[in-house]
Amino acid sequence: MASMEAIIIEAASIEAASIKAVSTEAASIEAVSIEADTNASSRHGIASAHERESVSDICRLPFELLARVISHLPLADRAHAATSCALMRHAVDSLLPSLTFLDLKAGSPCLDDAAFAALCRRLGAAGVGAGLELGQPLGTAGVGEGGEWGEERGEEGGGGGEEEGGKKGGDEQGAGVESVRDMGGRRKSCLRRLELDCWHLSDRCTSLLPESIEELALCGADKHTDALIQGLADRLGPNLTKFAFSGFSRSIGSDSFVSLLSVSPCLASLAIDAGEGLHVGAVVMAAGSLCPNLRELSVYDISMETLVYLSTCHLPHLTRFRHKRRHEWGMGLTDAVVMRIVRLCPNLEELLLVDKAEGVGHGRGDEFLTDEGLLALTTRAASLTTLSLRLPSLPASRRCSEVALMQVASACTGLTHLELSNFRCMSDPPLHEFVSRCPSLSHLALAGASITDASLDLIASHCPNLFLRRLKDGLLKMDS
Image (cartoon, rainbow, N blue to C red; front, side, top):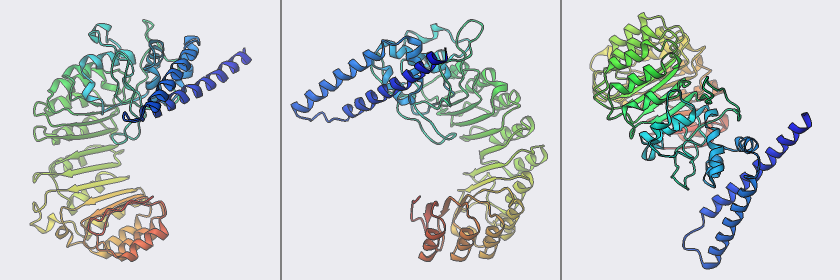
């Protein structure tokens, strides 16, 4: 039995290499220009015939072995293989329930309700019947490779045959052909993380999601209603641990978010980017009251009153705080805000404060960022790894000094990411202190800094792995 399994595994690796070679050759064929001469055209035809012959040989394998071979391929190659024949597409489809991450942010033009319902059913979503497909085969939708939460994209999925692909996908994280089945024999979804652009989808799309999803990033919600968020509450509810929302619909109110938070006690990460129609302060206060496990908060234009309310909630795990001020009613980058956040997060790891409301709210002395606010950061030096402070303009930093920045650098030696934009006092001495005191520094952004070429030489000699952004009055430099 052991020898037979070894033979199967060896055959799987050999056939995986064969399909990889076919996919690579086919990709190079597609890159040939239409303006090629007749000889090139004939070569293109010969290669296509060779590809068809190779795929035909692979399809002679037993279906279970074929699916196992395909499971070893990168997801972009699976998409290409699925366009070769119906058997290949069926084999690729059989692996969909084993996906753990799917990126559909770039699939919106071809992702309508019918296609999305078909995808959810093939992913193993419970309660999504075949009738919801409306006769539309899905084929290769949703295969690719993904990356970090809300930032990296996957590889393009293939398209062809009976339908066009082009959707994006994610990472399988070692999942094989086998997967758990429900009581009716249907393979249950293993999907844990989904990034979805719902621009072309209706409100009911969230009620079709696999219930196994724990991390959801939802964007493109610009014309939807409260039913979109209510569907999440009914479908995912207690399983949700991370939720990121981006949409500017005026028909989505804070009540629907509060309803979602009330059934999501395990929520650890909340990110909201919406328009003026949403009272984000009410959502943040509800999160503070209903989600005691909150670790990460990313919001915009909350008021100082909301921040004060958060400090009265019991949030011992909150370590990452991001806030962006876009309008005059949002809290700015001031001493009071920084010190309040420091008290709110005793184990602060990341602080990002962006103030884009230039010329607003900087009339009184207590509405500035001064050395007192900067020095408050040193009390979290033991845990702080990411510091990003963006003032609206250079005059807003006139009450900050080089000495305060040097003290921050001396205390916060664990920094890996540093951004200090529009700080007039960021000159050669403070930068020298940061570079020499923070050996793990990998990202640096200093827009508007008054540094000289000597600092650039120092960075080059002390930080070979540093990624540079916006140095010396907006000069963009990138290196690694």
